Length: 253
Image (cartoon, rainbow, N blue to C red):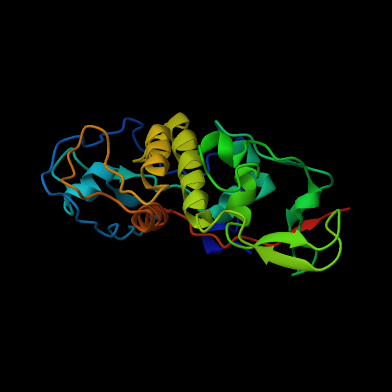
């Protein structure tokens, strides 16, 4: 099920930003901040469902109240519940979505969950976007859908007892939200919207924290500080304009 903000599913040709038109140009802070290691929660969303966004540099440097020109109203992007739904695949830019062996749709009941065996083509693989990621041969859609509870079976071809398995080695939630951030950055940049993280920064975040390190934006001195993996998850997910539940998906045939 989706939340009340997603009652109406937009057509592929429509704008999933809800008609909130903002400037595309991104004002990212790249100044230095000695000893910067302060992580701040995202500012509250306005009544219009948009966020006073801050770049990763602004978040790390502690600019809770951005100076004029440093922060601006922009799109906080869509959550995993949006990106996994097949009717939203037309919004995937820069990454390939999966194809299925039969029609897949959001369930009207709790029955008929989709299994990995229903996937014919995985689309973009996790390992091709995030180098060295566990579960590298799974698709980006799969890590968004099943970050910590990937369905595995005791028998061949998804038969036998179903088990929930962590195939992403404890990094599933990080990979899930970074994948959404990549899709948000690619879509909102191309739709004359604005998103405070670039696709390159998403890759840089993964490379910095995948082995337990901290992320410090290029061009910034963090003085031994920066964002941990958990802080990156909180930063990305705290911006989502729509926090939709990940739905049960059903086969129509």
